[in-house]
Length: 482
Ligand code: F0G
Image 1: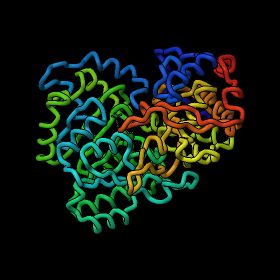
Image 2: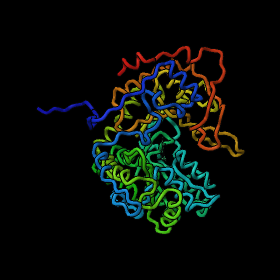
Image 3: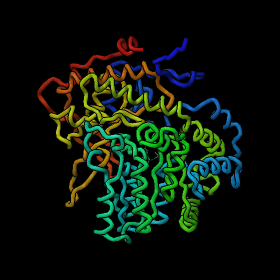
Image 4: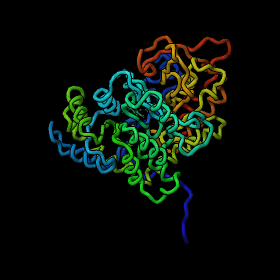
């Protein structure tokens, strides 16, 4: 006998549980109203299943909680720092490791220490904080994603790849001196959590080395990217995720990292790099704003948990489960006739809200409208990744549309089971049936930077029946689905 199971399951058992926040339909409606229709302004207790982000929201392992007891809280020269440093060096190979409280602090330190106003920093796609930190430094963030990466329904194994010809053309056009840095986001969060191939990283690396331009990875989801390479890129099926990660990092000169993603921790990050001069500038920049270089923005116990998390995240069994989970939710949503970015990314399912709500123009923010409506009917919280978040401007400084109006259903790591995802898929199918009842949004408040976090909206006026009258996945149904 040889048992060949086809059931895929979570590669862990659950030791500690936390109740979900069950709100009634009425409570959700009131909460949404109070939040100005912006799900970032909800209280977490008002949310049933929280797919707002996969950042800092995952479950830590027993080994990580245990390691926290070993935290060395010394101000200088903490043992926990050296543990973290060794772990980061093992994976990245970079000489200098600067711990930070999260990814955006690493970005801020790097950009403010080494960039000067007027520069351009190309990337496949800069994510929101990276873009904002570049803008704060007076630097232009330029996205050079391959064309197919902008087309949600087109299949391609590495839709996060950077357009290398466009990079060459940009360098030729503006000159090497205006491009002090090239970045690549792995996986490409803004474009659907899509991976970047080793071949593409190699090509970008070669261009950067030829022009003597430092090349950095925004490495938040490096392990998921490595697993995609193992599964999809010819020649790497036998390599371990760690070996692939080492190859990826070896092609670049440094990285910024939000450890709240593939560090498997609730808070943390780091900046790692090879160049001694840049490292010194970054350390000097870091001390007044983040902390002494052997703790950055972290407690000793945070660094312990992160050192363990960086190990656990590279377990191929964990990574297979992780990618399966997103693919499972994606398949269920697609089966309900809802367009999504295909293939499914590593950390999230991205619904093509622009296509689903094709009665709404981009400036009525179909992704954010869908997010509000989905929360209202089901208690599921999601995040718009479209014109609201990207906040692009045209040459005249007027608001411009993002390439796509997406709604991200980000899956926290090791947190929700398959039946939670079944409930989410059911809620999405319901809202899709009622899509014509969803109205557009207009601002009642808009902040100058990172406006999506604090914006307030009103539904646009429309005579027909609103989602308010038609909705009905209330507490009863939520309980039944569990
Ligand atoms: N880079 C990428 C690609 C990210 O996705 C994020 C965060 C950051 C940088 C910044 O890291 O939050 O630790 O400061 N993304 C979260 C998200 C917030 O929901 O995707 P941070």
